[in-house]
Image (cartoon, rainbow, N blue to C red; front, side):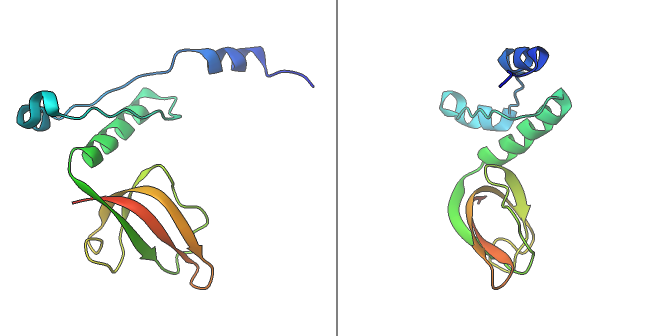
Length: 122
């Protein structure tokens, strides 16, 4: 069995690209008590990493609650676990779309949907 391509192996061992985002209002309100969050992602392009950083900041800067939400008839193949997504559903807090972090899911083969386990911003 041969090893990986040397250039690919070098890239895998290289330093990761870092990006960060801050919210001045949160820092002013909480000062030293403000939370710091970090996420590793597969983005190779800095602009994409910056966009994901902004999405993560939008999520973590507000209080959130752990919930389940039923998504019906969408033919969900795989839930976007570990990602922030906007979920629209006929449930309180979701009718206008809610930014959620997906923790996991339970497939419902009868309806073609799923029950998503999420963290939702309040």
